[in-house]
Each structure stands twice: as C-alpha cells, then as structure tokens.
Length: 140
Length: 140
Length: 140
Image 1: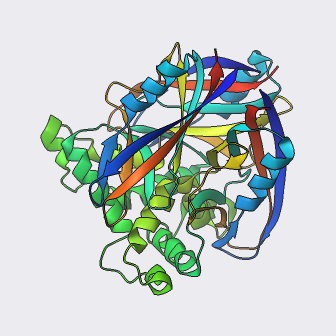
Image 2 (image 1 turned 90 degrees about the horizontal axis):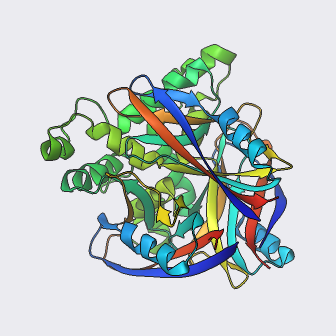
C-alpha cells in the first residue's frame, strides 16, 4: 500500500463554470501505478465544489439554476457585511455541495458510470485559477 | 494494510425508493477480515445517491419531498432537450447529494449511530437495477 | 501505511450551532506521526453534518438561513408522527449535507484554504454532546 499526491490546475472562467476533471484523475491513477484503491479529490478554497454529473449542456444550465433557488443572487447576505464582498451565495452553495469527493479505483480504472463525469464547479462571482488536490491511497 | 473490493447489487422499485445498505457494508467488512479502516461506497451512474438517515417511514416521505422543492417535477429542464428524456430532476438531485460516502470502521464494526442507517436513494423516474461499489482500505 | 483512529468530543449549544474543528483534526494528524494520507471525519448520529466554510459570523447566519428554505421549521413532517418528535427538519438537513467529509493531508498538514475551515453543524433542535470520529489512513 502507498499514498500518491498530485494536483490538477485549472482556470474557471465564470460563475457556475463546470469543468470535467475525470480524465485528469484517471491520468494520475495511471501515472501512480497503483492498481486498487481510492482517490480523495479536494478543493482548497470555500467557493468551489466537486460532484459527479452527466456532463452535457442541458444539465450545465439546469444544475446551477436549481442551486440559485437555495442561494439566490438578489438576496442580502450577512457575509457581505463582514467583507464588503458580493459572493455570499457562492459560499452558501459551496458549503452545501462540499469541497471533496472520494471515488474508488479498481484494476487501474477510476470507477464511474458511462454517463457520469467528475466535475469541478466554480461558484465564485469572478474567474479563478484553481488547484485541486488528488490524494490516492492504494495497492501497488 | 490492504484494499478489499466488493459490490452490492440491488433493485430500486421507483423514483425516491430508499434502500438500507448498512448491513450489506458490514458483511463486506466482516468478510474482508480488515479490523480498522474506511469504507468508500460509490454509485456508478448519475441518478442515484448515498447518504445516512434514520430509516423510518416518516423520513422516507419527508426527505424526497424536501428535495422536490429544489428540483420540482413540473419545471422544464434543458436536459430533456438534449435527450428527449424526462429525468432532469433526477440528475439535479443526484448531483446535489453526491454519488459517494466514506465511513470509518473500527474494531471490525462500521461506525454509525443507533438511529442512523446508510441508504441508497434512486432518483431516476423508473425502476433500476443498481451496482454499488464498496472499496475498503484498512489494516488486517 | 497505517490507520490511526481518534475521536473529537464537543458540545453543541443550539440548533444550527457551527463549530470549527480544523485544529482538532490537525492535532490528530500531528499526534499520529503520519506524513501523507487522508482524514475521514464522520458524525455518528442523524442530526449533525460536516462541511467546510469560511468561518466568519456572516456566513454562520447565511448558511442556516439557506437550509431553512429546504426544510422550514413551520412545515408538518411525517417524522413527527413516527416519534412525536419535533426535529424532522434537523434530519432532512443532516441527510442532505451528509455525515462525513474526507480531506487529504500532505507533509503532515491537513489541506484547506486560508479562508476555509472544517466545521461540525448541529441541526438538532436541542443542545447535544457529540462524538466525531477521525480515521486517518496514511504513510508513516
């Protein structure tokens, strides 16, 4: 058994930008030479999240729209009084969704459905460069 | 340390069907002979999720009702335009809840509260046979 | 590779009480002498959750307010009919948020953003003493 630490670097263009990182995680597993284990994927920062979704244009609209009902743009946020900031909704959505996802790999392949991709979602109100941590734990 | 891969197979009968898999995970831990570690449980597919809940009939109604507010049945979904499908709401709920849960085990026992069970929830609009992946990482 | 089991004990004062446990997890990593790996943090019980958030007073108001929209106080819950209880909303919020979070550590440090803390949130309607499980898996 061993651990294998790696990072994915990406640029998110706008609020609700959704980026497919499935292949990035698979490449890290391949490079690690681990065969069986789990990938713990984590976003340092409090305005971005990870989940899985069928990565097609329709859901890239539907999903952020649904979250906007929970944390709408036009509501006053106490967070804005703390920092004179504008991204209270971004924090609420990121904390609801969570910053991490842990996914098994088996026979050197990250497990996921055919129509299921691992995505990073930027909830912040401006473009952001992001570093995503991938810590593998598994058998050589 | 070792990894131990296993699968749970189940049939979900209808939309919002909630199935208690706590004992299935415990049986896998027992069979693995691992004593200390974590169980990473994962649903391949983008219309089902895992969480914990007090598994009693009241919450089996309350919980899906609460999610219906976020992703209602009668709303138009852009996803339906992509595939002429009817399960946009299923995808939204599954991506919100997430496809995985990681739970520690200690002295050969899966950790959970007395009134806390691990459940799979089928958000799809039709019955589905499902395979759930359990990847254990732990000490022998 | 080794596992390292530990517990955090805390008292949550009221509904929606949010407690920063980042330093508690870091202390466990330091004590374990593990250098690279993951921390699986888990709440036994079905009315509390773990996530990350920028831990400042504004968001400590904004976040519970947003969840109240999904599981409002004044709605009837079928759960109350099962137990003549009053915390249906607490269960719904806890199952939505989930009972666990898995976070990588690297060079002996728990990974998190500067403005990102790991928090326990008590959704129950009364004060509760809580035990939180931390199971580390990593390299010595």
